[in-house]
Image (spheres, rainbow over the protein chains, first blue to last red):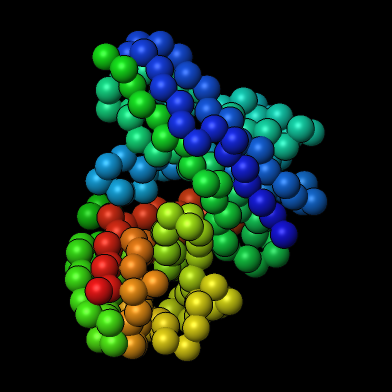
Length: 117
Length: 116
């Protein structure tokens, strides 16, 4: 079974600095999807960024980028120029390829990010 | 687009009562998912539908839980009878499809359930 591990329960960073959140996963598949979701205090799950495993290029979305290391099964999230509004729980998630039919997202336990003004 | 809509946002009930959670997926999305979030177990998939048909309900904890999707724009998750250990945040999510570019799941705001 696929598993997702976020080894940092909590992280903190100074406003305007850069922070990297770690995520590793376990799978025997070669094609899959990876996601980072943000959950602010409102509890809404907000998609931050998405990566397709067959693409070698790392995904970027404005201040958010990933470092996808397929061989190492690592998928870290880098937040540049941290802002107070970035404070939230961040979840890494894995999804199996569509050919298997399964649609389940497997989530890590989350990393709570604090932004210090 | 209004996004995924869930109701109620908060529910407090007493043990033994029936609880019904509601979800309206994003228009045009063919897949609907129900997740539960607890401190102990994190986020876990309960059930998902494709074109209103339940595909995988292996995550449904027990017979007290049931889910229906009578049409493309409405789904319910029912707990009967409810127990204190059912207290959690329940999320509904939807996705357009399962293939590249359409597989991203978009979440609703969640329903916070407290069973006393």
